[in-house]
View 1 (cartoon, rainbow, N blue to C red):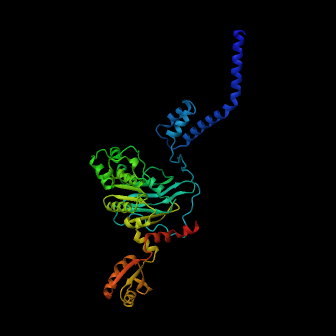
View 2 (cartoon, rainbow, N blue to C red):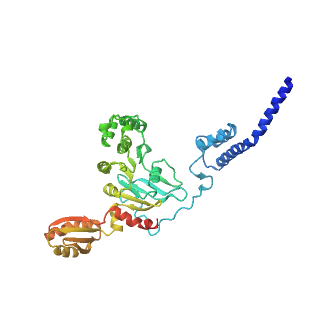
View 3 (cartoon, helix red, strand yellow):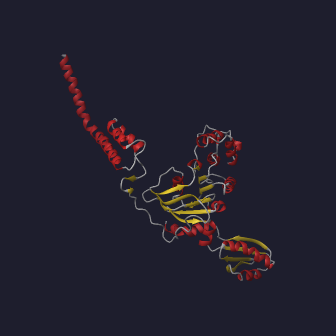
Length: 413
């Protein structure tokens, strides 16, 4: 076969191969062109872009080999805040209305004589009908703020927005301290297993507060209860110890605002008690916002409470106000002597709404509010000369008030 015939044969074979592959390449070409077109349209509509001017991104999309230029814009340039020129926030999916039959937020705005360290206004994060909707949070300086709610109520989403790890769909949040003075401990901290506790906390110090000496690492580990485990590798830590290590890493920078997501979830009863004592001791020195499913923990340490239900903040105020507003304060009193004189003396006071026997030597006492009962019951018993065996609140706790406030939602779900 001649050289010309051989060349002609190879050209024909190549043309046949290209002709056979062309139908398979058409969808890929359409996808690449469509991706470039989407990026250009998005770029034209966006109010702002990241990392470079709009003109530069146009050149990148058109000049860089497809589809690399479009992919660079998607990951590095596209504004993900959801805003467009002239249109304000993007349209939200139909959001659930505020839960019916539940009173609105009990308190809002600045507490009397207090400053606010965290405020939100109409804060919304919409995940297609779930998320947060119109949350107006008000957290005073130096308080311990407990955030409670059922699973899916929006607690972690709210804390993530406050710590700037997520962006709201609408509304805004203001934190009145420098971002370097804000520390966050997630519900499930995760660390490299081959590092020691000391190395991890020291790394946190070097990244966030390099001006602090290494003595702050020792202090943070001691505060979190890990001083004896400083040189152990984290891979051998229990989940509770990892939780403590997350707290130590947050405390090492001496933050003014500390955000804790479920800080006691992985701790045993003794560890929970230690953690709660630690949080309570921070009151007045720094502000703590923490979420928890354990309402007794919140009542023990929080002086302000926020209750989320279906993404709506339905209560904000003190735990005592919540109990007084949504529960009838009630006590069970056991007397070693005749209960009749004590019952008559209690009924004669202005703050007792009802007195009834609950057993041979037990009285059930209803009061107008918690403070009146806590102060008045011992005084009346002492004035009668009776011997008090016990005095226990009956259903006057945060859990009962929470269920009273959210009970309609539980019945509907």
